[in-house]
Length: 106
Image (cartoon, rainbow, N blue to C red; front, side, top):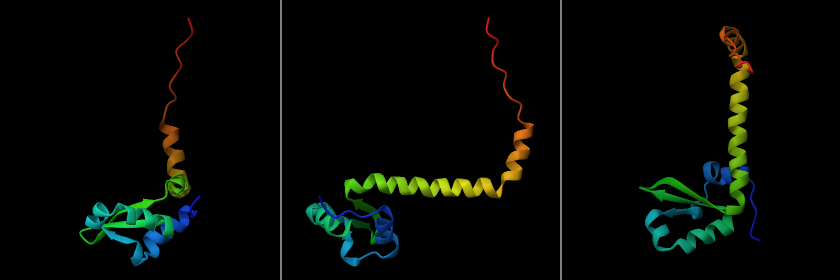
């Protein structure tokens, strides 16, 4: 089993502390993907540049689920904050919605 990195660590590597050794030009990635795989094994992620701008991130497959879970938790936090900040408006809107009746059993 290779090095395991948390989703948070991967995000830090990608967005906060991009190690210049983990940057790979698209052309080089196409010609030498084994280098990209080696970077992922050693550093947890590799960033592929397109037109000198970060475009793709390659992470170890075993980390994909935790990364997705972390992303979902960020969405959940944003939704909770939105509901909390607008609770009164949502409650008012709910008063104007009439419940649909269930069809009577024959």
